[in-house]
Length: 231
Image 1 (cartoon, rainbow, N blue to C red):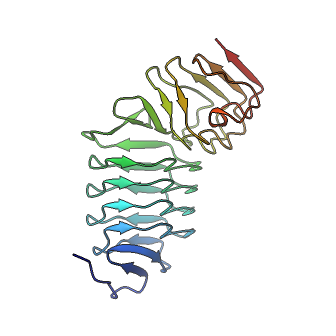
Image 2 (image 1 turned 90 degrees about the vertical axis):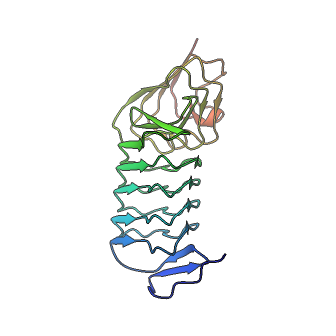
């Protein structure tokens, strides 16, 4: 059954439950209860928004839904949401904390790419697909690092043992990181995982991957590196 358009609030363009475009000027936004999907680039470059309340009717957040909401500081994903798609909060430069409910079953690539202030990602206890380790987002089995918290301030990071894959876009824009240690369990590094990590100068490689300084392979993990130490 389709959900009729909601003409009550002219700030929101909604079609069959999909929020197509936000046209308002408020810094504190409450998404209408008629919305089930926050659409692609619905809040594109709404750089004046400081907070967004996502209602219990929302099920899906589409790719790049909140891209360039540069004043947004915190997002709490309600229990109704099951899908957060690729780059949903990309370039939200003021975002400090993302809380993901236990209901989320699918998280796309680089959901917080270039969120330079992101200090931690919190996953609600009981989520069967995802978890948080030291503020970073992983699959529940610990085999994939899905999103690194770019603003945690660490200049060095060691990928935990057991991680098999570093997800696409997962470190994109992490300018503070200077040194990275790849554990022996690493088998794959997703595309563009380390793009724009311009200060990542040293890589300690304990994996079987053949990584060379200056190479754009393996997610650009050593593209900016001056030294790569392979076991």
